[in-house]
Image 1 (tube, rainbow, N blue to C red):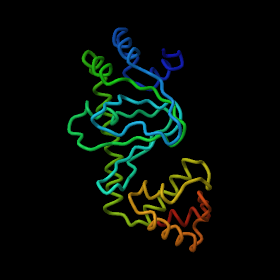
Image 2 (image 1 turned 45 degrees about the horizontal axis):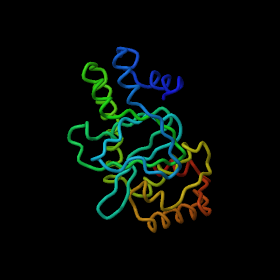
Image 3 (image 1 turned 120 degrees about the vertical axis):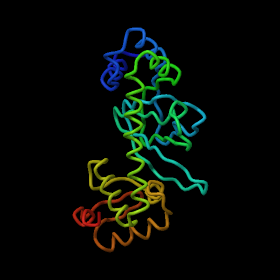
Image 4 (image 1 turned 90 degrees about the vertical axis):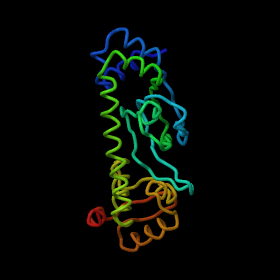
Length: 224
């Protein structure tokens, strides 16, 4: 049973909601459930299973892919009030890769089942339009990641990543492991460790067990 606050989240973050008919809203609310996932939980990992449309109420999700060798690379992250439709890849044409979604913090979300979302979209063209806009936006994020991998050196990518993590944490000091950075950048942990050690020797960062402090943000920006 959805609470009033859940309905407010749907209304505030789904642009087609206000123009939807009472019948369409009923279909969507009947197909919406609230879930809370602990940090580290895998929320979605199989394109053959349509998880549905996800709307983050609070927390943080990491969307990533895994290669045949087991190497991971982060495509993008979702934060409070962000929407994810790649978890419903079965309703998106020409999606031929598995997207994995993991909760990086305790995350509460609303999930609209694929069947309900598609049913409401049959009578409301604004719903598939919204889906296409979200997909387009996320593929822009994916292409940015591809561009970094193909055309940027690792030191530049690492500097950008550290600055991004500091922005997410709203602090120059944040908890992160070398393995987590390697997963984000699609690299090997040993390579990341060597690069971070070089950054530390250059006075750009200070490394601690399970954490990093940025000492010279301007120097990192100069690498980007």
